[in-house]
Image: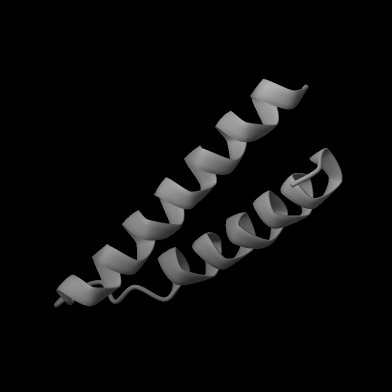
Length: 55
């Protein structure tokens, strides 16, 4: 993946992560909701590490 594609993917995932966090209910959070957020955070961390390597 080139630098521009990684940046675009980071932006997209950051937006999606923000939306997911905003949609969490104040009570009764389900495990699948937390898992989805954690997976997005892991993908973001991986992409940021890739970007750091090529920058």
